[in-house]
Image 1 (cartoon, rainbow, N blue to C red):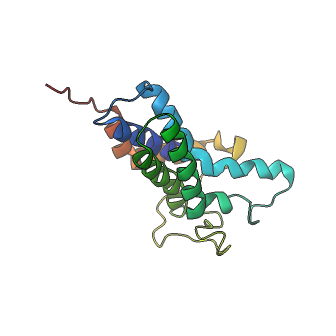
Image 2 (cartoon, rainbow, N blue to C red):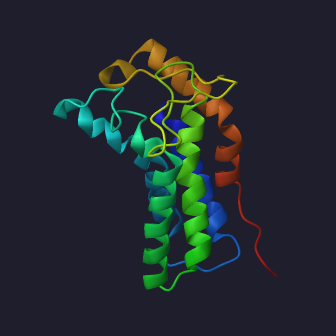
Length: 173
């Protein structure tokens, strides 16, 4: 999946998190932070130049795409939220959903090796039974007509998240 969908999930989560409470972060900064969390599982691509193969445990869509990784990130985010006097449980729960959404969306792509959702208990890679999302080319190959088509497809598919994120909030009386 191209990163557009993951960014839109993070931006929508940012708006959902801010709804009904005061936050310290301006909306754009919050959207960037939550989108960063949504993209975090792809940190595994730093392994490519280090010789980590795609299919390895720590390769692309391996350990960092697991539900255990999402829960670990959520625990850290919850601790940071507590230290910042923010609602720790609510923040951790939304962080878990945002990080796990990355892996679940990646299982819906039509390429790659699947995601190691159950790591460290199993290294098996999984795909969803329904795979409507075209896999995006990695690296410079994304800047091509195929990459553009996939990006447009992804924006259309994820448009409900974009609309929700950009829809003006009602002002309280």
